[in-house]
Image (cartoon, rainbow, N blue to C red; front, side, top):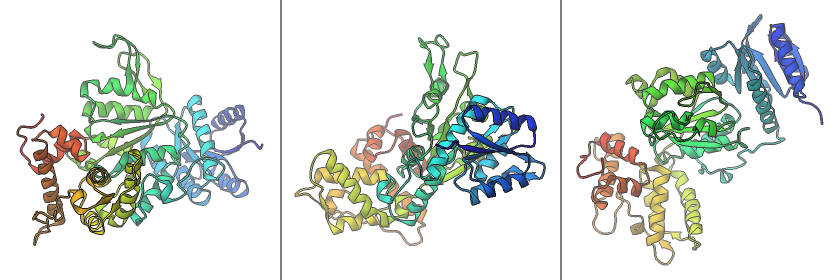
Length: 457
């Protein structure tokens, strides 16, 4: 089997020699050049398994070379060598198509991990290994709409980078599914995927949960404990509802991302960490920055690449396929035949605004599956609030002069109030009934100005 070969581009002879010796010990051949012109010539005459390029070169900017390699040689991963602490430049390189970066002075263990990841990436890009999305039916993010085709195509690209990804979208649109898929398709797929809901961890325990702690560092710390960064070592850490991080933790997370070092609570030494950060929120993070509730520098580092998950009401053409897929799963879970869906019921689903998105669709079908008779789901079985129920219930129609936002808010308000009424104003139960988190439910109540009476605090 032929040895891998790397192209090293740096104008400092000492750096070129260090990289050449390190890669030689990893059984990787190298070609070393000192400027962009020679790098372009080498790329034109030979295929490389990876490139390591300095950011500043005598005849130009290394980021220009990143863009060229990304366009002309997409099967060749390129990593940037940046000045220590220059995160802005590193982020610019990632946006241009670099799969990762290493800072000077070069930390050799970090370099070796980066190189091994690049070799896995080269294999997957060139069809010699690594999973890919072969078709829509193979993907947990289903739907043949143009918006979902775009999402899947972008996930395929994102999985071949180490850049932080920020996933946006309403509750129930599949943000965690997207994050898991990015991990599963990446060179990190043999390492852990660790998901954490930042809004579900008490603020006083958050530092310990993320970074770990030493025995005796605080009351109740009876043993050393690894944090979620250590659990995700080599893999992907998914920070869901990252907008809920308190400002004090935002500062510490920012430093971890910049320095790739974590310090457990009570520890005197920092630990090197190698995780890819994927974050998500249903809130408008840019607006939170403007409101002074989220650090702009952290937002800039988390949001290197943004993936937007479309709301279900924006892709109604996907509903029939989703219904078929979800009903098969639900029936399979109960080892029962898959029920048929009346045309009238399917039409109602296609016209329903789905404030809870795919998660709400799944909950509606679960309920309908339990209520239906003779393996046929009718309109009444769906229990939708904005469709005729056959019992004189009013159809929710858009009022003259009413904006789409006002209409959807009115529908959402009715759904929340109905859930509260059915659970006697127990918000925890109502949130569970709608398939959303308690924090999300409380946020929606506050947004719509619904009275907090008689509910859980």
